[in-house]
Amino acid sequence: MKVLVTGASGFLGGHLVDGALRAGHEVRALVRPTSDVGRLRTLPGVELVHGDLGDAASLRRAVDGVDVVHHSAARVVDFGSRARFTAENVTGTQLLLEAARAAGSSRFVFVGSPSALMGPHDGDRLGIGEDTPYPDRWLNLYSETKAAAERLVLAADRPGFTTVALRPRGIWGPRDHSGFLPKLLGRMLAGRLPDLSAGKPVLVSLCHCDNAVEASLLAAAAPAERVGGRAYFVADRERTDLWAFLARVAGLFGGTPPTRRLPPAVRDALVAAVELLWTVPALADRREPPLSRYSVALLTRSATYSTAAAERDLGYRPVTDQEAGLRGLQDWVASIGGAREFVRAGR
Image 1: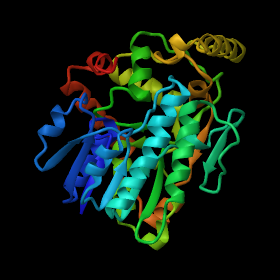
Image 2: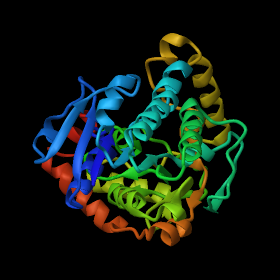
Image 3: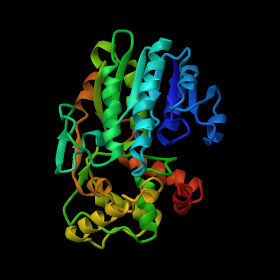
Image 4: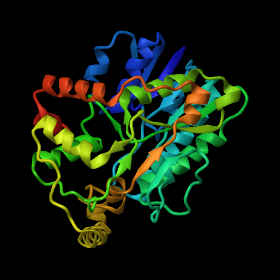
């Protein structure tokens, strides 16, 4: 098939390009004129198309002749205006859906996020399934706009144009410079990551990039009558004790494991102060806050996701386990000059 990958110059998008090439597909990559496409240019057979999710004409060029769209581009940071999040995550997805449908594409695979289901007052939740409803309110604009975009994708499903949403949680692996793991590792290398868990186990699902790619390729090929208009959680096989995992990563890369515990009352007071300060547009639109309700929720709430539906409908099975993933991450970090270079490159 001929496939289009959005976000192809980024972490997951780049791995999606690799996976589609290995599967024998023709690959077109949608990239911005300012994107770093050095690695993509080294891949034989990848066609680069310059465009932007806000530019409908460029999207029509990008989907021309394409069978399958893998839409992984999104604004994933924890800062920015509502208008910017809406434009990049919601309006951009709508324009891409319309362009793909008009061009005769048969499949649209959307990379969503379990954050779309996170409400401000949720507690620990284990074994979450796809019957979990969207909340009435969200923790941040990223979560809210990812939920809105996912709803658009699922509602667009129809005969001849199959739409599927995937919800990988905590994507990690080589070539990631800006995700949760390099950010936390950077703080551990500087000895500045306190343990926010208040001493309780925080059990989470993570998703290695190889497993997210596997699910995306399976979603592109699964029978339309089985998967059309549906969303699926995707995760590694392991259920991870988050703070033990972070301590292990710190040990692997020479950082300081989080041991200094921040009392919940102090933590919550700091979050409230930071979020009040980040109502100032000069900060809110340009810089990520050091703490937020969203980041604290990710680090203190247990949240694991059932992949039973993905296994049943997509034939999904994780292809990379956590041990192999950590070895691969170590090899890649060594190849680029070590952990400090890994973290520095994402700043």
